[in-house]
Image (cartoon, rainbow, N blue to C red; front, side, top):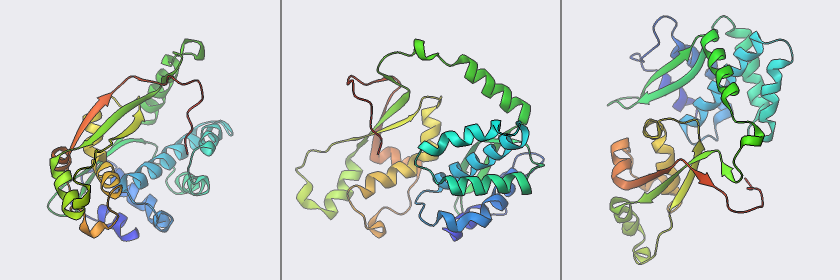
Length: 250
């Protein structure tokens, strides 16, 4: 995974924010920890984790002692490597303290060579103001609709090119009825199409691996256009749970 990460950031034509080059900063920030991501299959998982650590580091540096740790402690119930998270937060605070912008988004643009990374940041005051506004606008627990799940659901349905690929490998499955997969996303995602353009390959790989684990026989030059040709995506912004038992997340 080290080579994968370094290659992604190693292109001299990287698109940067004006002024401070936060793409380069992200490379420097990640470099000491690349071996900790050896088991990561998807680039976006690495970026998401690193950006989370970067922003937590900013919060720890500007909030009164103890207040910043409350947000960090809240992730302990998630399936996340909190030890690595805390080490990266410490690195942010000690080695990158002067870079106070929060990273709010990134994009890996496809090129004929290595992907080109662009990073979007917000200045400290703007980020904190937006976060405060979001917190104030959240529904109280009493106003929360019963059985309403705060997620967006996307349903990914294989189309004929996917089936052609699969049946060539497994002709015995040609008469089977296919089930489709549903993925839950944060309700904070305002533009699902933009999210898909950034995350499509993770979904692509999950769908391929569900049927065939030999990655050498997967389509190798995958892009967003191909994803749209191979899969139909349906979006539901309202998800309800009709059962009384709580949802179990494994």
